[in-house]
Image 1 (cartoon, rainbow, N blue to C red):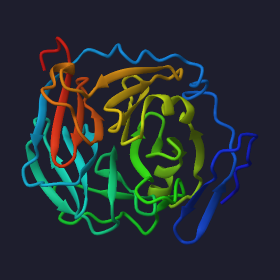
Image 2 (cartoon, rainbow, N blue to C red):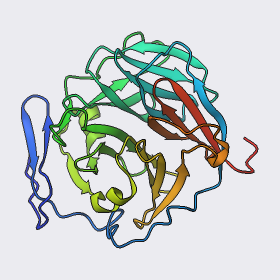
Image 3 (cartoon, rainbow, N blue to C red):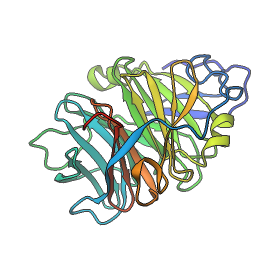
Image 4 (cartoon, helix red, strand yellow):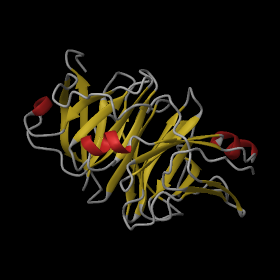
Length: 303
């Protein structure tokens, strides 16, 4: 594998390792001037939210007692998938929060994120070691196992319980996004992962999306991310701030949801929100510890 040359900005170094011993080191990189460019200078209206209604709120997922985290929507099955970080499990449930199955996971620990890529292919992220695995889940799956021995390891942060917290796939852009919880608040973009999975070709390309200074003023942490292909925007969930922010394709930030009592019809504030996903009808799905499910729909949609 080759080496990516550094730029003139001194950010915390990233190291990316592909299994079998090959590695790519990313030092001080220049931030690409696209989605996250000039975030520091852009004003964000932190009071005006988008118009959503909480149609399902604080519904316990049956069979789960604690440690619910991560969330993704599978458009092929029209179901949602989340992870449990202890014991390691994957949960599939429908749009009303009815659990369909709970699958044991035969790898990793402290699972925090999951994202559907295509067909039956998923990416799963672990905060322990900041690892990403590819796996396949279909109706016959009994125990979830990796597709191969190849893994992705990102050296975001060596501090305990402050590492990789979010993962999201952009099908149109053929790229994977990974988010670090804090210190720093950071999102990176990985191209070439699908080629690595399908053809064993290691040609990974990395960009740093580093909205640290802007997000630091808005959010205490990143607990989940979800790329919305319909609007070509990134949603960032912060459980500490009880907010969902959206960043459009020009890097403009806006407030989507305040997850507080009285907002969007919420009877109680959402505590410890850990997973975020978009449905094809514009609904926003959120899961929160220990085992709670929420569905927000656009006002007036009738959904």
